[in-house]
Image (cartoon, rainbow, N blue to C red; front, side, top):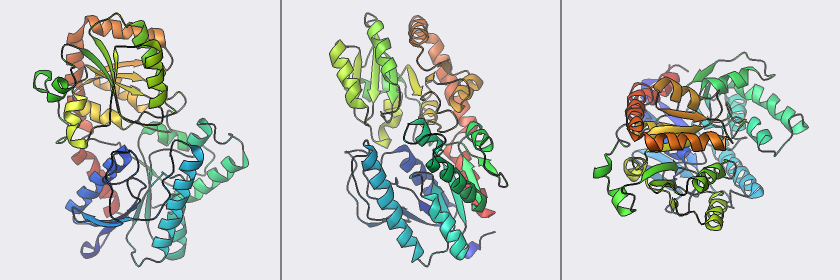
Length: 408
């Protein structure tokens, strides 16, 4: 148990306040809550770079009594592999030197991105027995293999898995975002003599609330009145199959009330806009990423919101956007496989529909179905908020991290 007079935590994450990446927002909220629990919190991150709209920040900053240290790192285009690798490596090197020569001995909370970041925890555990918690948002090398960066049985993959075994074994706690990720780890060749804690992500129950359409200024501002809005909100990445949404929009272009709305930015947005222009899709609209304080309004424009997961990524990643959608009280259209957290939530909460990735005919038929039955979406939206309040509020989830830290 930690000394009550010297409770502290060091968070290592490439993204943190005021970055708009979901990882940054979640860890910022977690850090804020640890301060409420009486912990000294320090964060080693980099200058904000996830979206162009993010403001510039100083190298050292105190935010809500959280001490933030922004180490030097490259800021190349993250949508290019070499650019992303350079950014990862430079952050890793900078934060390694900072911690090696630091007198702080607080436990570390290390996020799995960049993928070799937990090596710092392994190193400091061996050098000075510093405790660390490994929080897995994306499972590597599985994700790198899925994206085609390395081969399944390559030397790199084999070495990576062996290092993972050591990192997991020496960690004081290993935290994953869902049971499918835990099962995937257990099925690997790693010698499992460590425990895995499953802690879901969350949304702030006070920051994201359902807003009635007639009271939503966002609808008025962007001329969305009298539209059935099918919303995709969040990062528009290179490795998400969002083109299927545009295929559906093309097939359903004569449904006058239907609007397919994308809110966000990312490396894949250029290709989507190109397709929209090529097919002259007047039922598709793009808006930029919205500030956190607007989320209640932007998420509540939806009649149904889309969560997409690339085929084969089940157990490697859990889309954090689903928790915001649940909090906003909207029905969910999951373009996901059957065995994943998103599919489980939709089924248990009765808050939407699941469609296999790539099933364009299934997607079109489901949209036609809800177009004729909007009243069902309201019921499902109410179910979303109820299920969220029972399982995924910020207060419920961050308390689980507090209990972990209190007992390592």
